[in-house]
Amino acid sequence: MIELDDVTLAYRGRTGPVLALQGTSLKVGRGEFAAVVGPSGCGKSTLMKLVTGLVKPTQGRVLVDGQEVAGPVKIAGMAFQNANMLPWRTVLENVLLPLEIVEPYRSKFRAEKKQYVARAEKLLDTVGLSGFGSRFPWEMSGGMQQRASLCRSLIHDPSLLMLDEPFAALDAFTREELWCVLRDVWERIGFTVVLVTHDLREAAFLADTIHVMSARPGRIIETRKVELPRPRDLEICYDPRFSDLVQVLRHKIAEVRQA
Amino acid sequence: MTLRTEDTAPWIFTIGLFVFWEAVCRIFSVDSFILPAPSEIFAAAVKYAGPLWRNSFVTLWTTLVGFLLAVGFGLLLGLVVGWSRTIYRGLYPVMIGFNSIPKVAVVPILVVWFGVGEVPAIITAFLISFFPIVVNVATGLATIEPEMEDVLRALGASKLDVMLKIGIPRAMPYFFGSLKVAITLAFVGAVVSETLAANAGLGHLMTQAGSNFQMPLVFAGLLALAIEGIGMYAVCAWLEYRMTGWAHRSTMNA
Image 1 (tube, rainbow over the protein chains, first blue to last red):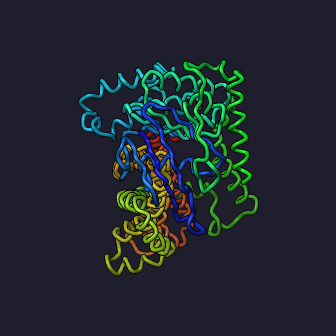
Image 2: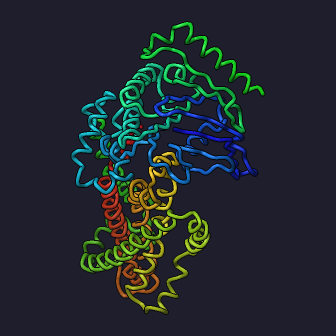
């Protein structure tokens, strides 16, 4: 589904060229849940922009769905640490936003609005927000906004979901709740996910494979399969295999931080 | 109870100011040519109610015409400036330079071009008040969250899509907020121009009264200006609240 082949990305910073990624290679299969972890400032977010076609690599190739990425990929949904809800739109209108932009929905938006609304409501239902569609984002808690943000990233049936630390700003309980929400949606629909995070437990709980990035310039230095059985529930966080995995990842990151 | 005190506070303070003013004038028996007491000012206002009304109306409409021109032009220029970084960088110094010119200095030029009358007042009101609108609209557009833009651009949204869906709605609170500043400035512009060169308007009335040594009438003119200014500000503030209430509520809860 996604293939990064020896990708280097440099951009002009304030004080001269900055090398964000150097010689990064990465493969994510169709329907796979991949997590990318690494120290802060290692170019994780740059990775997101590369895959979604918002920036072009300086060197190397980025392939999505077997095709080299030349512009915005349009098949991706995105969610960020900040829910980024538009405060002048209701939750439902926020969720519908991508359909106003991306084809083939865009040209049919007026005609099929009813159907789209039903679809958005169903999606809100799956993340536990049924009945909240007519609220405004600022009437909801951070966790609820993040749920809505997840709906917005999924409304156009993307085959690829890019998540940039989506749960980082939430409290521990809400975060674990949303892990389960994401797990359930993913298991039901089966899209490909790339989750950028610095929470190792989050990565271990959700992902099939975990990629560890080095400090800037970023490079994938280790890839680990998560051998924990599915379906997983939160109990698994107390499984020794789980703690061992987190332990190993933690050491790996401590190493690259010092280097 | 607290709410009621808060609601009546503006009246209490205004009346208090006038009472204090009256008291000072009487206790120190200030010459009414230097500073007329409020009672004399009100008396003058009643006596010259006719001319005050007529001239207030002239000032009102010149201000409003200049203000509306500024809204249209400012909105347009703000969108253009906020749209492109290059235009923003190129036009900004020019606009700041233009805005730094005291508009009093422009009035004589306008008089040469358009003659004495309402036109210079309208143009001065316009010139002085479009700048805050441009700056605010441009700021609203320029401060779109980059992540929000990424979300849309990754879906293939054009610059126009991003502006229509995010930029313009986002700039609206800035725009309506700037109207409150712009209307007061437009008012100042119109009055300045009337004071220098006009046949009508409160500015003209006050200059005339001043040269006739009718100080109570001059102050009555000031009073009329203040009332008119408050009225126009209130309308803009109300408009802001009606149009972009979400912005107020969201900041209150955020």
